[in-house]
Amino acid sequence: MYDFGLTEEQKLLRQNVREFAEKEILPVAQELDETETFSVELTKKMGSMGLFGIVVPQEYGGAGMDYLSYAIVVEEIARIDGSQAATVAAGNSLGIGPIYYFGNEKQKQEWLPRLCKGEILASFGLTEPEAGSDAGASKTTARLEHGQWVINGSKIFITNSTSPMAGVCTVQAITGKRDNGKKEVSCILVPNGTPGFTAKKMTRKMMWRASDTGELYFDDCKVPEENLLGKRGEGFHQMLSTLDNGRLAIAAMGLGGAQGAYELALKYAKQRKQFGQPISTFQAIAFKLAQMATEIEAARNLLYKACKLKDAGLPFSKHAAMAKLYCSEVMGRVVDQAVQIHGGYGLMKEYNVERFYRDYKLLTIGEGTSEIQKIVISRQIGCYE
Image (cartoon, rainbow, N blue to C red; front, side):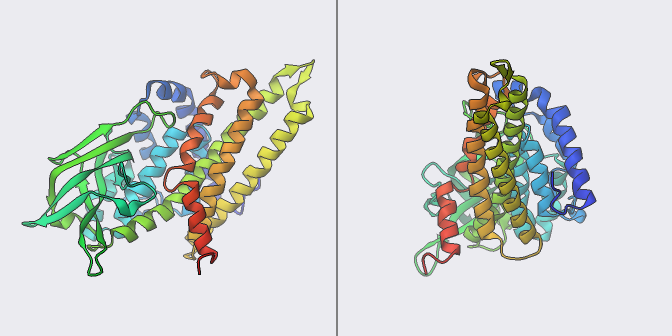
């Protein structure tokens, strides 16, 4: 594989994470998926490896790496299992990200060291039952009363929010109205276990069955005024920035998942014999594999470029949206052909490719649907000037 100019540290990181994923995650991935079990043990092991807080400076307990390194970590875990990759991706982008980028020094010191070590996990309470792509339709409210925020409302599809490791949630809420009549949106840190805050695990998912997904309910939930993240009224900006960064991680999940499914298909095609020869030698199969390899290579180039733009401090929103759109949809095409190559066996749970086929779908929906990405890209290229 072309190394894309990776540093020796990044190459070693890839090797270490790949070995961990193959040794620790692969043997239990099917069982965790089947039983819908969030693994505290695996999560803590990933924390001890420094896979949370990857881009956070060492002074806060992080690894002090760059976004390309972060993408490599998520890519290598997703190559084996989407659920564990989701835990790491959400733990970094949606959990740690808002506190690191928008928190004050006290909030950073209080939360980041434990989050970066993987002792606890943070979540981002954005999506609501009636507010998905239209985040502005949020109904959760927070009113300031006697030095406390009183929060009421609910959230849904929130990753890392209900397990025994869930420590704090960044909740987006309506905190008033602006002078122009529009909603004032703010983000508030709400520790798990706060009275009035209930987290309920969501089950019977098609995908990421071993990741933790929850419904959150706030019933006169009170937290101190100082739990406001950043400045009052900056919540919408904080959300957009968080999603920009998060798209790089979702793209990495798509890239890693595509790589994993492709490798499964290639291995199977070389072993499976029909008409006296491996099916990989038949042009119909060989061409599928060639197309898969080509799209994966293109996806990796696009994602790594987006990460390098971010690391260089250059505008990257357009490329992040492009990478999220392309990598997630490439995984869809790759897993579809990977199952086809496996034939009937690809439909059986005993084969990992079946799990990859289910896991890919959320990538075209979560953290902005493919349609939303196209809106973001079309705006960036000047379609609506």
